[in-house]
Length: 182
Image (cartoon, rainbow, N blue to C red; front, side, top):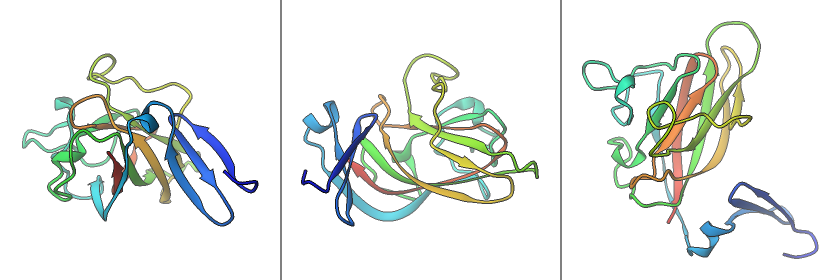
């Protein structure tokens, strides 16, 4: 890094910032595996506003037809196997992380912010194999107003690198992918 570069670690990822340029570089175990970033045409994986998707992992989130419910209930966790997406075919299994674009809104007019949390799927423990990490959030959302954020999420420990999504208050979520690390 040059004199104008700043390095900051966030979990297992390092954000390198130079003069007008920002780049993500893996840190620690992820960096040692020699993973490369693969850009993909941006594609919508999850959109709870419309017809539900069939990519949810947890049986408790499914309707009788086998599709997940639409909008999230407050405090709900859903697990998504991104490699099963029929809307974004060809995503590989065995990835190290996902580059995602997130959008989030809550319902109701309280004006109080609510948080969305996205984290790697864990194959054991908690609700349906998942426990919401304490004191973390990926982004804040507000009632009846969409908020957007980009996030690099390490892949889960299952073979497909699934992710979990949690919303504090009831609302809708959109998850789009623009790349992955492998």
